[in-house]
Length: 141
Image (cartoon, rainbow, N blue to C red; front, side, top):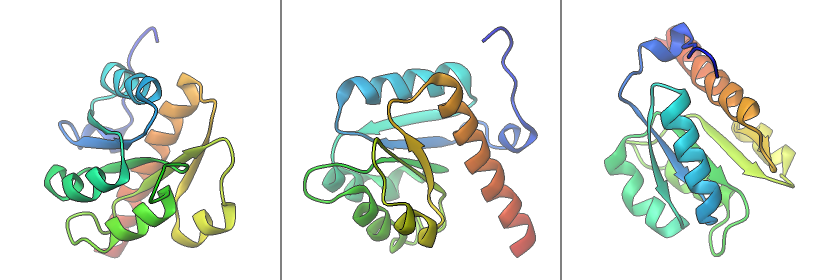
């Protein structure tokens, strides 16, 4: 990108971390590199749901990027279990997969990102999810 454009909603969140839960190491690395080069956020990649359940509360992420199709606990189940944790409750989430359970995502207010993903779509979705979350917080406080 020629010049980094940071939306106002993102400017107040410098230094916060986006948690990426993705079993495919190449996709995880792609997302991490993209986030750290094109946004003001840090990122942490975790490759499985169980490790995410254990680690996420200590990271205090500002956004969850979750793969839907993972062995054991799928992305929806992981999201539900993370929302039960006080440290994660209310954190916006983006679910990633080639096929997604749209009704389940809509019920939970989870954003969707279809694989294969391109750089522009990922950045737009991250920006949208974080800006919407920040706007929602303004109206609920």
